[in-house]
Image (cartoon, rainbow, N blue to C red; front, top):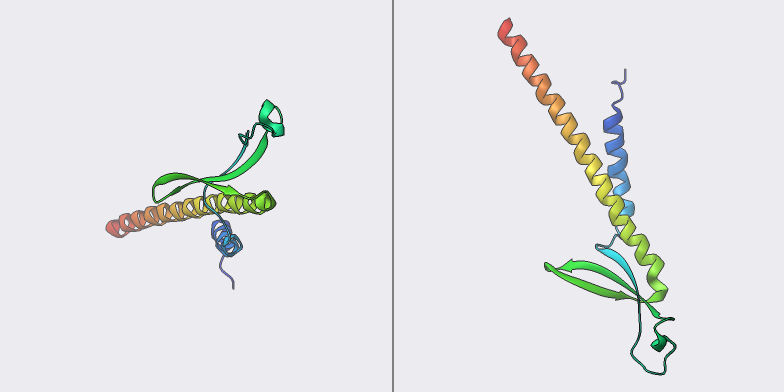
Length: 119
């Protein structure tokens, strides 16, 4: 006979199994800027039709950095940064499930000790 199913354990297992899909994740935040290039004859010199610039903003060795992203890789980088957000959400859920189970076990141990003392 199978033991009763624990939905928290099933959720935790599902999340842990899904972590392998996130192995290409990137840290940081995606930033899109518009700026003038500085050339006086460029179309951006009027300040209206600016160039787009894409960056990843992150901490490297504890220092803030901005890494430029080529326009052809923007969607790929956005998806990889989103993977990290999903990873963090999964990790938070796993920790929450583990804490809930730990507190339940602690309470059950306390109740068992109380019953043992009464016998």
